[in-house]
Image (cartoon, rainbow over all chains, first blue to last red; front, side, top):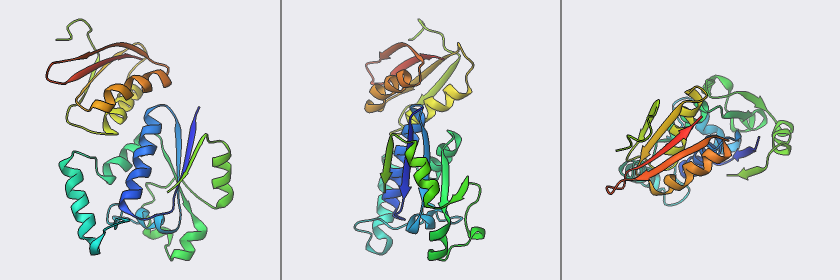
Length: 138
Length: 79
């Protein structure tokens, strides 16, 4: 079985979308996927904050993100919420990095625990990566 | 149209774009019983090429692909 491990380091909406689209594509084509959320990526796992995110470029205090969501809707692009729910439905795994949760001041009780399969540190990431044919850092 | 193959399950992804056609195909395959036929119909151009790739990597059987003049394509997969 082919496996992908993707580090979601960024909390930006466009980068999260990329991670979820690649993850869903990989699962759909028969692979296994682990998303490893760390640093700003962890903010997207906070309850209700999945798509309440800035853009990596031209955010313009949130106007850019709003415009991007509008354009994506018009182009029938699935929302981050739908992509996340599909990712879980297809058996995708999510690991939240415990060490950076402390650094970012994010406690478990703020996170959407229905999404998270495991909490881990670098050893868990390396272990996943060693079994993967594809690893990405987003 | 498509009377040639009778499917057990139809996945309608007309108007949907990447990666939804692949994802919905995969979900239907997960739910289907072995031997059942799944029809996926959509309009997204890249998915028309990618679903057959996914069918191969999932070890399924591609029964047929057809495209209507309207641009709607139909892909038949056997689990």
